[in-house]
Image (tube, rainbow over all chains, first blue to last red; front, side):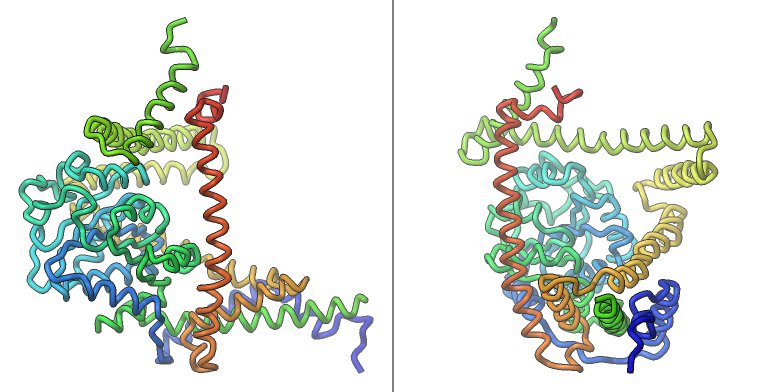
Length: 276
Length: 212
């Protein structure tokens, strides 16, 4: 018979010291790093829609790529940028990279993203270009969308736009055939959505729920949700990388959190019953 | 008093620019478009200068901490040193931010430390979910259940445990989540329209110095 006057083992389950939780977390996350589990990964509809949307864009088209990566977001968004960029180059699409939110975006693009891509013969200035960062968030997006040459005089590498063949026929946002948004989506969708360009979004998992209304409404054709979406896309473009390698750790951490939620609630409900 | 110093001047500028942007959005008039494009580019220049103002402000705050030896003031010295190290190395070379010394500092310091600090959230979230996700009420229980189902949908191990987590998790994201966020976004947009109209008509003066 359980002694309800004392807390007992079940009651103490609700008050585990957080240091014990931290140690358990470190130990659990070490397991897939030392010995990968290789769990199967299914393809979500949102990721498939992203892949199909980019697959439907005619070869030779130009993509506006908002690479809003910061250093702290690179583990989650970096693989998305790399995977989608690789798909674009696989399909012989031209890519114009620009950043309106993250001042580090161009720096990370140049040092960590472009070096990992197979450009399939595309040359800088002809097949892709990095226009850099423009301050002002929605104002700079609106300025870019309405007249690119009025805002942008040279690219991130100090080349005049007139000397870049890729920029020859690009005057406004309407001249792009695809918009890829990596990061927060609502501001770019507001500013570029009215031009009717097919849009796909890659975002971090915390922000993904607020992109679903755009997806349901058809304003966004596909979503990559966090590192899981990046892992699915890496497998689709046959370029497994950081995201696929991280999925085992995601599984372990999620299971641990669920177990802790159950343990905490068992202890909580026992204590509540005991106090009654 | 000169008109430029009176409070009506910034209100008039705000109203003019605001109504011009609205007009340019809905009507195709070349003169209005050209002026709107020019004003938007000025705003981008102002925003860029705001980055500089923020930096100067940071230097002032750090300087005050060092002078007054407040808190961990020695970290402010390190902050100022690293700031100027990044600025100097970043300006080297023909293109800003491509000098090997800048790239080395950025890749080995910033890119190592920034995600590490963000990853520390894993510990806080683990501890917080353990303590906060309690079934205190029926609504809390429903929220908890929905959260667990979506987590199992996102983790590959969910598929190993039960194939039904994928359709259930998708339904939660596409139906109740979308409905809830749609309501929030529409409500927010209506509030934004109301606030914008008040700003354009000069009723909302919070952006003026003193707010009056």
